[in-house]
Image (cartoon, rainbow, N blue to C red; front, side, top):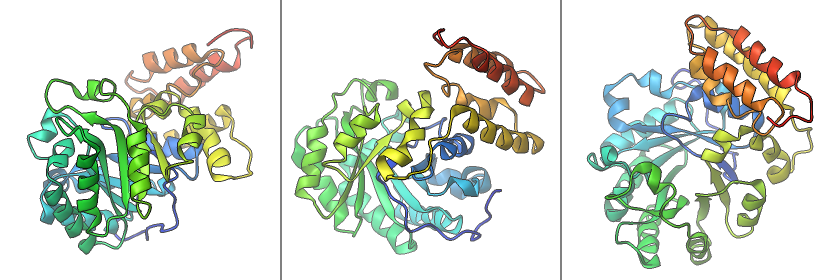
Length: 340
């Protein structure tokens, strides 16, 4: 089911204790539905959507989602306060639980339009944007940013950025614990090359105890997440849960204290197959959905064969649920002693 404008009231009781990162070209609605099958409580984020795409483009294509995805946040890219306010209203009308401003993406494409990490050099402008968005909606408005950008090496630059925006009443800051280099590094390199500095994010929380500080960057296990949660309000994972999505299956029990049993991979695949069947009937190609489940059996017997069948067959014209059945047979008929 896809919501229509004003058809859903936002969920005001969600937690940011564990979040799935917004990832361009990856965290689309099919990916998010799959992730929701693994965890009820994880806060999901859309891919970044620019204000121009919403104001001048196909609004429904960018904003529609399945109601099961809640709690769900929309991430916006932009730097014009009026445009961001208009798009924040769209987010609230569409039933999103939060709207987030991207101040962390380092790509050349967004820099040229004053979007992303370059905004860390413009804290007053970001504050103006956040204030305009907050005036337009009742749902939370949050910021995702880096610990610094280019020559912003000192902690004071990060603290000034956060202080300036916090004066608007914004309470939640999602901090990627790496600097961004706007020149000289590709977006991919900016996710790996600048060193992580978790201590700087922890210091930010210590000096701003009234703010909600969520940490992002280099977190690969729930053990790491639990350790970081001793000092911070939330953690956000991205690439790790995309490549190893079954990590999400333990989140509700380990981080939220739920007592229900952890769903098996087979149960998750059953549920996602039902979703795929519905979407196929609507004319969605199989490849757009199955690309998100390639890592479901990572490290399991037959896991490589599962991935290979989907990778080779889901792109064929007319491919349907039979591809999933063939892939599933590879993991269900493997001797347990074989490495996947």
